Image 1 (cartoon, helix red, strand yellow):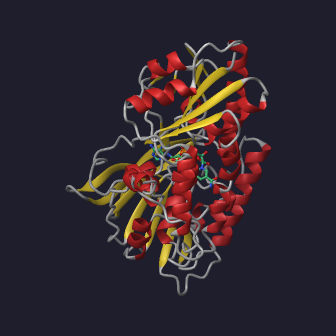
Image 2 (tube, protein in one colour):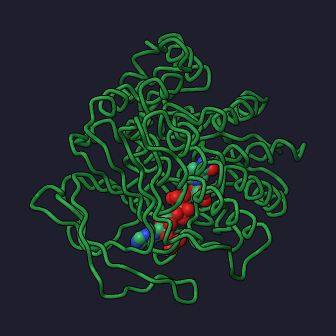
Length: 433
Ligand code: NAP
């Protein structure tokens, strides 16, 4: 009998699971269940709009979604439209591929002030994710502080200082493009609690910062060591050497004629967000690195700013009905097996690290485990869920519907841009009627 599998979440980890299950050649039917009408998770809503090459991986997912025995239930939220318990009655196995959609908190006073936007929200806003359309960050400030030295921090800083021309061939949400164009931003401080050698951004992303039309990177020569010393893998050593060389090249860049600056600031950790209801600044404590960890020195300084973007990593939400490890921010599992026919892949399994391809092995592991654990299917699968959702009047967006949304977005794009995104679920669904 056919084994019916439901994969909850249609980002990279969900798609790699579907692909791995289909590749087994076994009699498996898989349904992707997605809360939004649109598929692809962080490829659409997380990868920066000016990194279109990275987004091209969605073409592979597209083929997977259109393969025989693969279904797509978009605009269906587990917990709202159907419960996990109901899915367990309908599917032989359920794979959680729901990612890590929330921001980790800094845990410092003032974090709730207006003008503090975690990177998950901020990136969602410029990427047109429907959850963040109404974020409306006030960009009338001249100074922004981005906390963190990862690729998300660098994405946020870059998108804020790129010109309209540099963003012309991107799918940045119109509201964000307009707000950034009208912004008063001159200085973006990207602050790391450790040093330039410990920074986590990758070299391609770092180098981009030296090639911007109207912005220059600013680095204090005094913090750059002569060479990279430490105990790490050869791969990390090479990355760190490349980053150090790039930062040294930044020292040679002529700032003449450029109106904006991205300051690469190191050895400082945030201790308080300053201001009344709205952010007016941030208090930082100088740090030094001891045994790889950042340690406060007791010396403080303030940066006056109107916007703070903590880009310090993401966090998964507990999934209703599934045991959760609060400390790690992931579901409790044994190598992806959650128990009771439930499996986990991607960031809800491993935490929010790694690149898109890092999700592939998770999908392969889950597919292997499912076929090890279940030799015969006994649940009805697709038709049962489809019938239940009809009964509940849920407006399911299937893959053919998504293609219509996709075409509508592509056909209304400005010249050179790949698409003009719908930024509300209502508008996406309206495009189908
Ligand atoms: P990340 O790489 O883990 O970087 C998080 C940064 O926040 C680190 O610099 C970290 O410092 C800092 N941090 C954490 N807690 C802090 C605190 N309490 N106070 C101050 N600083 C704090 O995470 P990410 O940037 O969110 O990226 C997530 C994953 O997606 C990464 O694997 C990333 O490479 C990937 N990604 C890739 C791309 C790309 O390839 N273009 C784009 C976006 C994201 P410490 O190092 O000291 O902990």
